[in-house]
Each structure stands twice: as C-alpha cells, then as structure tokens.
Length: 337
Ligand SMILES: Cc1ncc(C[n+]2csc(CCOP(=O)(O)OP(=O)(O)O)c2C)c(N)n1
Ligand SMILES: [Mg+2]
Image (cartoon, rainbow, N blue to C red):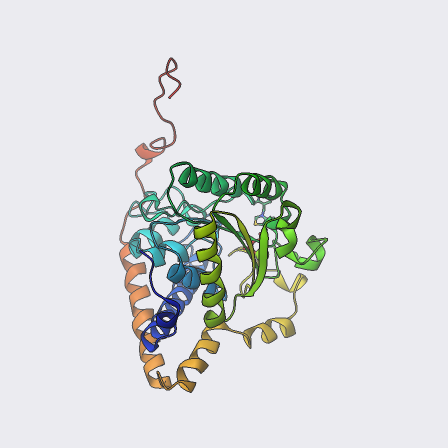
C-alpha cells in the first residue's frame, strides 16, 4: 500500500533504492536500443533514457498495483517498477511467447492488468479518455484509487485531451494528467508544435488545478508528486502536472534524424541536468555512497539486465496458430456480450 512517509523518502536506504531503480531502467532501455539495432526487436520501440525520474518517483508515492497507471508507448519502466516479471517485459518487447501479452503486443503494448498497469498505447492521445474511464470506474465503485495518466508534450495538443479534461473536471475524477514535457514530439520540438508551450495550463479552462515540476531531480520530484497524489486521493478531483524532463534518444528506435530538430550543444547541456548524475552527487555529498559502490551497483544491474535479455531471447516466438487468439471474443448476439 502507501509506500512511505516523506521523511522516509529521503532516508539513505530510500535514496539508494531510487539510484538502483533509475540505473536499472537506464541499463534496461539501453539494452533494448542495442537489441533493436541487432534486429532482435521488431516494430516500433521507444525508450525512456533521461526520463527515469517520473516512473521511479511515482512508484514511491502512488500505491503500487492498487492505483491505476496508463501511458503511451514509452511503457517499459512502469511494469518493471510495479513488479511485473522483467523477463516477461523484455519478452514482450522482443515479441516472444514469454511476453506479458504473449509477444503479440510488442514494445508499445506492454500491459499488466494485475499490477494496475493498463498499457502501453500507440495512438497519440488515444489512451487519455481510457484513463478518465479508469478514474470514473474507481470513483463509481467508491474506491480511493488514483489514476495516473501519463502523456507527452506532443499528445497534449490532441483534441481528446481537452474532452477528457472536461469530463474529469465535470465529474471530479481522481486522475492526474501527467504531461511529460521532454521538449520533443516526433521529428519536431515544443515551440514548433504548441501554440502555448506552458502545458500545465491545458487544464485551466476547466478549472483543474495544475503545476509545473522538475522531472530531472528525483528529490524535488518526489515531494511534488507526493503532495499532488495525496491531494487527488483526498479530494477525488483531477490535477494537471507538467513534468519538465528531456528525451536523450530520438523519438523512437527508428528516428535517426534528430539533428533536424535539436542541436548537439543542446543535448550536451541537457546531459548536465542528467537525473542519475544529479542523484550521484547527492549520494556523495551526503556520504551515503562512494564512486566504487556506485560502479559495483551499476555492474550488478547491467549483469541483471543481460540475464533478463538472455532469458527472454531463449523464449520462442508465439506459434502462428495463436494469431487470432485474444483478438476476437465469442459474443452472444442476443446478449450483446
Ligand atoms: C493519432 C496519432 N498521430 C500521430 C502518431 C505518430 N506519432 C507517434 S508519437 C508522436 C509524437 C508524440 O510526442 P509526445 O507526445 O511528446 O511523446 P514522446 O514521444 O516525446 O514521449 C507522433 C506524432 C500517432 N502514433 N498517433
Ligand atoms: Mg515529447
């Protein structure tokens, strides 16, 4: 259930856990990038390198597996943190039968309903009304769940976002529209695609409370996210969060032309804000960990990721006979279900 109080969230043990989780996600995502280039992953794939604070922070302030999470296609970190079998996450990304959706969803459709994780959606903005629906469902049943609906700066322009915000405000739905402003959409950047680049204002016409937060600093993020999650749970009302972070990689694994919309200088400047490097500095300054220990942790987690990859790679592709399984359902035309 609720993971920890704020004081505990800053304890040395907790800071070490943040570090481990952020490094694990980065190494996992980097492994996916390599595997993609080796032809081991097909279709589209999008990684969250540089964006580790959001999933790790929320994982500590939400009630994992009780609260609902729904996101777009940058969906590897959430199930890993919620305790889904990592081999099943990697297996899904690799299209293998060990995958969470038996390899038929792929990277953009990682999904683990038992953990409260509702995917993994490829249509930009398409999952946002589904998030509102999840929040409606829990409120209707009198539960006190919070729904975290993650979306990108590009997705924030979709019409359905405004429709969903309208309904969420009208019906007081306990949902956080968490806009991850990583400065880029697909082949374009914020100033080229958004008439108003202050994305936290997207909820203002509907009277939804909103805030812009730093998504590159785990310590400040955890405080902001906790305050907001607690407020949404208590008030059972929506909230718009704009999370300022940065996408190191191209849009997806197939985006090789990123210099068309960003410069090398800008990328170098962003790396100075790197969330893992920032946490390393805190760990050193507070005498919690030295470089040697960090390197040992990194090595341990890199090996873990390698073992996960090997295990997933040993799993076969789904059998061709499964192609229609879980696609259609037998419906009684009389009953309509
Ligand atoms: C309806 C729709 N239009 C276009 C696309 C192609 N597309 C995929 S991702 C993307 C940009 C989304 O950018 P953003 O929301 O900022 O997310 P990020 O990739 O930065 O996480 C676009 C245009 C799509 N998948 N769906
Ligand atoms: Mg973006």
